[in-house]
Every structure is written in C-alpha cells, then in structure tokens.
Amino acid sequence: MTFTRKLGRSGIEVSALGMGCWAIGGPFFEKGTPLGWGEVDDNESIRAVHRAMELGVNFFDTANVYGAGHSERVLAKAFAGRRKEVVIATKFNAVFDEQTREVTGSDSTPAGIRKACEESLQRLDTDYIDLYQFHDNGFPADKAEPVRETLEELVKEGKLRAYGWSTDFADRAEVFAQGKNCTSIQLQLNVLDNNTEVIALCEKYNLAAINRGPLAMGLLSGKYTVNSKPSIDDVRGEKSPEWMKYFKDGKPSPEWMKKREAVQEILTSHGRTISQGALAWLWARSEQTLPIPGFRTVAQVEENCGAMKFGALTVQQMNEIETLLKR
Image 1 (cartoon, helix red, strand yellow):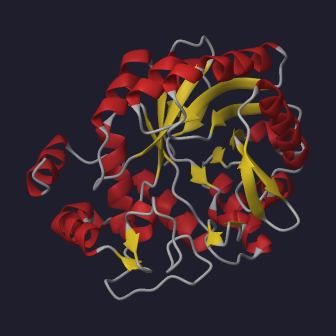
Image 2: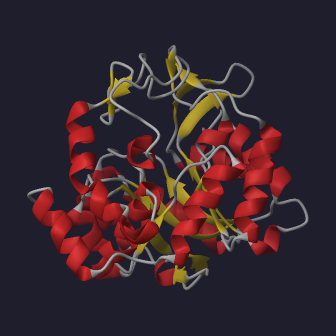
C-alpha cells in the first residue's frame, strides 16, 4: 500500500516516503575529507530508483553537490521519458569541480543561485525543479532574505515550483516561512534525535518537514554493530567530518547505539524491521513529516518501501518510546 502526503502548502502530492539520493552520487571530498558514501554502481542505482517508482515512491531528494553533480546525472538517466511521474527536489550552495569531485566553496549570492539552478536543470535534463532547497544549515538568519527573494523570482520565471531550506534551526526556517512559495524545511530528525522546535514551526506554517537522517546515517538500519567500520572513503569512516555525530573514529557511536537498543523492541513490533519501525515513528511524529532514507541497492529500497504497508506507530508506542529515551 502506498500512502501520500502534501508537500507543505504547495499542494503538490507526494508519496509519504521519499528517497534520499546522496549515497548514489558516489565519492566526493572537501580538502581530503570524504563527504560521500563510497563507490557505487550506477546501473544498480538506476534499477533501485525504478523499483522505488514501481512501489509507489514519486519523491526523490538530491543536491547539486552529491557526488559533485553525479547524483543529479544518475537521476536524469533514471527519469528519462518519465519526468512527469516524479517530484524532484535538489539543493544549492556548494561550489565544486565535477572532474576532481572536490568541493571548493559556496555561493549564495543571487548570481550564484541562478548559476547553480541552471547547472542543476542541465544535469537533471529538465526545464523545471519541483523543490529547490538552500543547502546551508547555519547560514545567518539576518542575511537570508536576499536568498529567499531570489528563489521567489525563480518561481515566477517557471524554473522552480517551490523552494525550502535545509536547516535544523527554527529562526532560519522562520525567515523562509514568510516567503509565498516556501513549502518545506529539511531537518535532521529520527526516533533517536528529535527536533521539536522546527517540527512545531512546520506545523504552524503548513510546511513539509523533510527528514534527512531518518535512519541515523544507518544506525537504524540494523546493519551496524559497535565494531562495524565503514570504508575509508565513506562519510562515516575514520576521516569523517566534525558534524558526523552518529559515528565517531570510524565506528558507530556507543551513545547512539545505546539509544537504539532501548527502543529496538518497539520498532520491530508486528513484524517490522528496525528501519521500517524508524520510518513508522516519523509518520506518527507529525502529519508534516516526509522521511527520505538513502539507498544504494534495490534491496534497501524494497525494505524501506515495505514500511508503507505497516503505516505509523500507535500513540501508545510513541509514548513508550519517549519514556524509554527519557525525553
């Protein structure tokens, strides 16, 4: 069974489960620090996208910087001849070299936003982007209006249908919420890692709360133990960036693993896998949520899509989890 939600106040209907397309971009780096999820098989990525579509998913979230443009190019191949069947969300701000796959800076000036938009349109092989998101978590709120107004202009020009901001801060989200065509905030949110302020803001303004990290970078996939070690070119590996909290020194964080163990029994109730339970928590958390778990294989897509047949957790289960996590 597929169920749907509205993409905030845009009214665009999307599957209640989206697909996060960071991992299928493959490796990319910033000053030697890996920002991707290791090597990928593009043919498998395309098969996985097609399988997601078969299972009812129509929302796909990427960014210009994922794989230094490669994720967008892979999606263009997957959507060839089927553009009207999907809702494409991408992001802007990073500046990078596609050949070396190195991130070289950022650009949120009006000219920079327009340039990034045109480049994404070209890589995605489309003449419009459904959702265009500002990809700078901590950009100062008091400097964000020119960014918002540039996005409003791009909507008027037909390049975008709507826009949003990928930020975990309510004061930043509040600035974008004032824009007529802002329809979403993308935030870090999962059963282990709540964000009450931004969820409340999304509910107040009828914005979609797109959930990155819905499986806590893999901790909620059931794949990892305390001794697991992602590859050296994986963003979770030994050279992980400072903001990587779920993995430390190339291994799952004991602190977060302990939280996972506390709620695992509830998440796996009624025949769910732990990842399916984690997605069920998000659907129960708010009517605004839209989780976008990442994937690299058909099997991962099938497991995550399988969560839709179970639906959301019950109110009782949600309360039990809050008690167990002492929130």
